[in-house]
Amino acid sequence: MIETLQSVPPEFDTPTYRDVLSQLDAAAEWVHLDRNIWKRLRLPQRALCVTVPVRMDSGDVHVFQGFRVQHDSSLGPTKGGVRYHPAVDLGEVAALAMNMTLKCALVGLPYGGAKGGIRCNPKNMSRGELQRLTRRYTTEILPLIGPDHDIPAPDVGTNDQVMAWMMDTYSQQRGYAVPGVVTGKPICIGGSLGREEATGRGVVYVTMEVLRRLGIKAEGATAVVQGFGNVGSVAARFLTSQGIRVIGVSDSACGVYNNRGLNVADLISYKKAKHTFEGYPGGERITNEALLELPCTILVPAALSGQITEDNANRLQCRVIVEGANSPTTRGADEILKERGIFAVPDILANSGGVIVSYFEWVQDLQKYFWKEKEINDKLHEVITTAFNKVFEFSATENIDMRRASMVNAIKRLADAHLVRGLYP
Ligand code: NAD
Image (tube, rainbow, N blue to C red):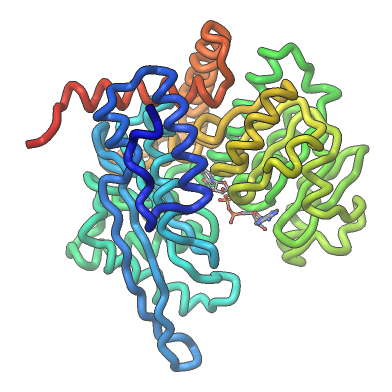
């Protein structure tokens, strides 16, 4: 059946796109998805490539490439982050947009999926260059975005300041403040309490449900976290607060390991001051490769895609993987993990805390009425644990893994929306 589907157009044909697509195909086949909806979901609805010329501090003009992809809008406006990274390409952005559609559908949000990105190295750019890059990119994608249309958010290499520039650029064009055009903004311009920590917090809410369901006690459990940015550092902090011993963490340069447990608050301060774990006195230095293979109860990949591969999946020594990052596990690795009985919670479920609280932020912006942090965290807990338990029970009843069960639940919701809306014209 899959062979007779349209092949992937060359502009999207990258390893990340092929991985996400093969997961979609496998779940669509399993659930006997209507063939016409299946064909439609394999490709994004819209993909915009933009050229972003920026006057650099040197006086030269550098021309960057940017993208915004909207995968599916059957459930509502599209939603997804903006990534600034040297490896950004159209295929990766399209794959991440497809993932967003599935994620929003899975956790019951009234959104479709989108993603954006600029191929650049934000670490080598000044604040002024980043601001000019962001404002010009926002202007170029302006026809696609808006609070009822497509709502960007932060992702790798972007943050609340970048969202503030995007919100301001959009608002200047409209002539009035439009906070609902982006989420993940600073609180003072309509951001939500709890948004910055939401993804890492959600990862930990899911982890605690996994431990409960598998009958593993937090006390005595150990965790390893790859990536120490927004998601990884918050997840590590909350894991510790739940009594779980965090024994290893890393960033793109190197990692730190201490079997007795790391002091995460201390690590956060150290990293903030030195921008590296190099020289940290509370643990041994460890490479990123070795970090993933440490014996532990819970492994949280919270860096980039494609970290758990056919090469290292056989050497992992964890019982549970909770995917903080998007697409950290390749399709081949996934098969190995399944055979080895490692319990994996897929990205579209495990890291959905970010988009759930982004949804709360958007609702607050539209209502112009803001909620207390406790209310936000309680609602996040309710939405993410309800989704987790629904998937867990479905996976047990149908005897399928959590990734397949998540995909199938998401696809069913999308199929219902497509079928009832019908095909235009
Ligand atoms: P970030 O830029 O804040 O942090 C990324 C971290 O990963 C940094 O510490 C970086 O040094 C590290 N890193 C990069 N390459 C690495 C490598 N090869 N090995 C080890 N570490 C490496 O980004 P983030 O917002 O924390 O996002 C991390 C992941 O989570 C991404 O896959 C992103 O798409 C996903 N995600 C983020 C959110 C969110 O709300 N921020 C929501 C859902 C999913």
